[in-house]
Amino acid sequence: MLDQEYIFLLIGMGLVTYLPRLIPLLVLASYKLPKWLLEGLDLIPVAILSAILLPLLLTAGETGQIYLLSPELLVAIPTFLFALKTRSISGTIVLGMLLFWLAGYLI
Amino acid sequence: MPDISTIFFASRCSTMNSLWERAKANLSSEVVPGLLAAWPICLGYIPIGLAFGVLAQKAGLHPVAIGLMSLLVFAGSAQFIAISMLSAGAGILPIIVTTFAVNLRHFLMSSALAPYLSGVKKRTLSLFSYGITDESFAVNLLRFREGNWNITRGLIVNHTANITWIACSILGGYGGHLIPPQSFGIDYALIAMFIALLALQLRGYKYAVVAIVAGGLGVVFSLLFSGNMHIVLASLLAVVICAPLVRKFS
Image (cartoon, each protein chain N blue to C red):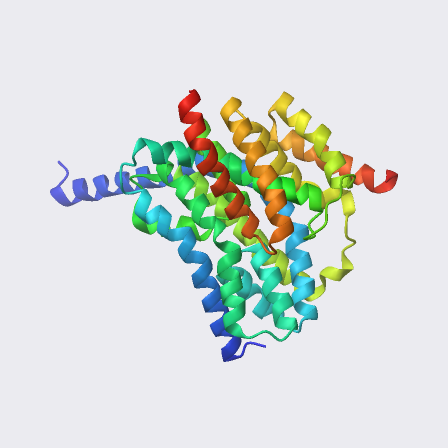
């Protein structure tokens, strides 16, 4: 299954994935950026994290459907509070996994 | 009296020694923090990588072909979509276009990382940008912002995650179906990591506002668009809406 077509596919997929990862770094890292842009960039991480996470929790990974009582969401609430309180990444991950594992038995 | 060549030789030895010492010092001072930051990502990539391998193998791909895709593309959701499109008999071009749309969000992540990487050599940046994923971005950005982080540690995070991804997808292609799913809540590792990173990003009122707006828009857009388009649209729109407000009130 390593025919020519598949190789072309991988090269194409690789390029369209790599270039958007590379170009902003090459361009932006070599200039002193204006203040408004830095302020905007400063807000992007929290926006991206939230835009990844909330749909993941509410739609349980499926498009077009909202689940208000998914185990993903129910476990997320204590996990989030724990993260806010302790500010520990590894502790939060261990707790989240443990709760999700238990939720698999209970729900 | 030592002649000139012995002196030269001795000085060369000492440079070699100091280079070696520096490399050794680097190993403990950079590799350990890098690995400590990378382990949650790797843990999370294990079930997803295996699942991808299993799926790709069912679609008729050889483990070598699977590993090659993980190496050349290194983007989880795009690879899953590519496999399902391949099984459905889609052509090369639609798959590449879809991959582009799904991975466009890395453009924003790369932009957000840029202010922390000024002065880094272009060659190093080219290597670093290969490893920018949702997960490595979130981890690296948080550490850069906290200070006490550098490009070497960032590269270690990216490439440890990359190796894990490639290895697990190949392993999945050989027989990942033998591993029971949902063991030990491992499926929740990445979600929990994102929860922790989001909580750590909420360092003030303005970030909370942006998070709520972006999250709300993300949910709405995810109902409207398939793939990952909602991430780019929601986060960009949230920043565009919130940045002027933040400016006005701070």
